[in-house]
Length: 301
Image 1 (cartoon, one colour):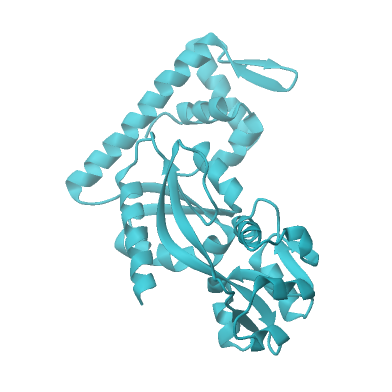
Image 2: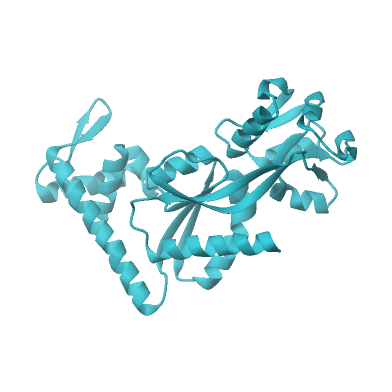
């Protein structure tokens, strides 16, 4: 309901880039430029300094940004108050999830959430953990669910589920016959790893360190940016890997891959992440509560 020009202005002011703002708003760059020009004509003053392909806020722009943030914040509060009065949780909810969670854990969660809150418009972005945390920090998404550690003290984090990582091998691989598998036994085989910035990779690196092993000690032959690519490579016999047990459920049932627990096991928490100081709409509060309940129920089954 808030003036679209203010929404566009606020995004450009936060990102200090017309191109990034266009991507975030799913608009073309000329459309973003047009909205800003209209707002500048309304105030009869420049809101941005434009020099050498860089922009910055003018004094007037800083003033407008303060009021724009207040106006849009009040709109969210108004929508939330009306939803609470009518017993619903409406509006839009923009979520982000790291690769493993976004591909294998979140879809059934969102299906159940939509059934209970059909009036909420859902959007989901899937990226690695570092990218999801940055999106929360930049207010590009309302809530993130990640498997890696979160260092930013300005972000609120809540553990919602504990995941196990297992050694993933083709069927019939020698490691599937080992009763108590130590990570040092993995060193003898070609290993496929996730990319830098992956929460899974960070957890594996920390676990190796705790066992006196460095990632450089492992025979890393390939690096991929998605669990699906790693599973394809393992199935083809190109190496083994360590992955969330949730990612290979289908392949285990079909007899294509095996998952072997390590001794000691690799456990990691899945965390819900959102801004500590940002106003949380009823839709956000409802999702956080729903997600924690969903994960708790599934952990008990």
